[in-house]
Length: 286
Ligand SMILES: Nc1ncnc2c1ncn2[C@@H]1O[C@H](COP(=O)(O)OP(=O)(O)O)[C@@H](O)[C@H]1O
Ligand SMILES: [Mg+2]
Image (cartoon, helix red, strand yellow):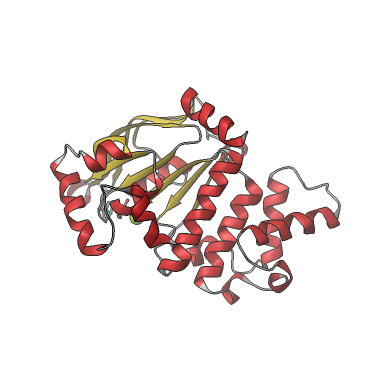
């Protein structure tokens, strides 16, 4: 049933986030940097999209604009078909109910003075669960922790800095489980952890898309990873989108020189990966 809903919603392909001519310029004069240069994109509901590019290509800047954490110098962003309006604090908070992110560095994502219960309780409150009985809230927090293989009882009363990097990453996903945003932006979410937990984290995120139809936008420099997880791939080079399309088209039949170069680099990083057979490649992740 869920599979059916998911397939339908992808087939219907409603737009959830799109942009026209989105540009970000930092600084002025000699220090002027065009970090994101007139990019157009269309992300559909329940789709997994990867934005791939080398370090410095503007990926994080684009993510920050999508989240409304940094201003857009030029161009427009549309959310659920409407021009995005985050002009007030309240509108911004409403927007964040629908779009959330997990970042490369989990340490920077938490308020270090808030205990873990408070971090999770915040998520329940944000989704309108403020008035729920305490018992129900604890149940929800425990469920979220068990979704990411953490034990709630072991986490209560701890601070985020008392967790390992891998546990923190998983706590970030537990937050997403509670928040259930329609769109998740994941900026290099697995770069801090070893290959084994990396596969688990990816599986958890992909399960969320299956369970709640969440759109996931992965941001990565790793084109092999992009191929493994995505329906659609956007390739970014020096602030511009140089190529986009279905994962198979872009990665098996790349048109842009830049994409071809990124692919040529892959066997050096992930020897066992075989681009001609997706199933075979998943073996390295289990
Ligand atoms: N706050 C900032 N001020 C000035 N330049 C920035 C700022 N943030 C990013 N940049 C520049 O914008 C470009 C793109 O950076 P970034 O978006 O972080 O790329 P990526 O995430 O792909 O590595 C880089 O040249 C970077 O130095
Ligand atoms: Mg980055």
